[in-house]
Image 1 (tube, rainbow, N blue to C red):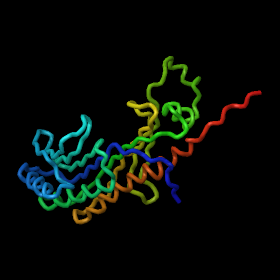
Image 2 (image 1 turned 135 degrees about the vertical axis):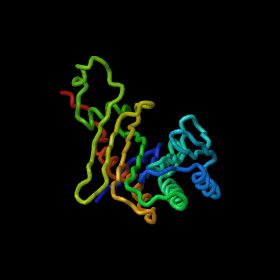
Image 3 (image 1 turned 180 degrees about the horizontal axis):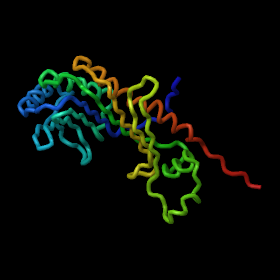
Image 4 (image 1 turned 120 degrees about the vertical axis):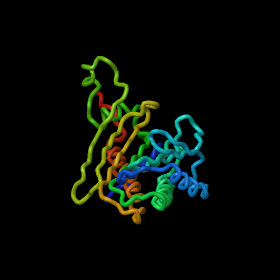
Length: 238
């Protein structure tokens, strides 16, 4: 049984990539996809552009680092929401709508693989510096063990890889580290790869795997982190 995390993570990025056999992507065909999406304000994109890298649908930025876009490349469709405050449930609905319309217009015989990325920020409850928290409480390292470097640590993190095992086909490349923009916060990222082919009429399987990736972060990785986020008792003085 999985325990629920005691944290309220702030999701800062959701990205998905759906890979299919390479084909020529026609700008007119993607324009038709853009027009179809534009009929529904919840899934529309305001801008349409073509470059040597592919065809891009995007929304206007409210902040300098915000990204709300769908990219059409010869072998994949990418969907990105970064720093837009989009909830995972709304993101999965967007995925389903984009792929539903796209499979009607593009000749996609099968999705051979897909990948999801979830990035979140967490505030440890019992430590003001995420570098210190990850180094001393999670990894059980002392400040003296960093002395050979001869300088303070600017960023500290951990990387873990979870291969497919025990009948599970998903592969997770996971990292947690202090957040460079605010060292009080822990930055967590999971890149989940699913190699099981999916037929175009099973689009819900593609959105379900994004929810699985989100739950891997929320219900597994953050529960792991919380095991070390305990109040530290001051040492006894004799």
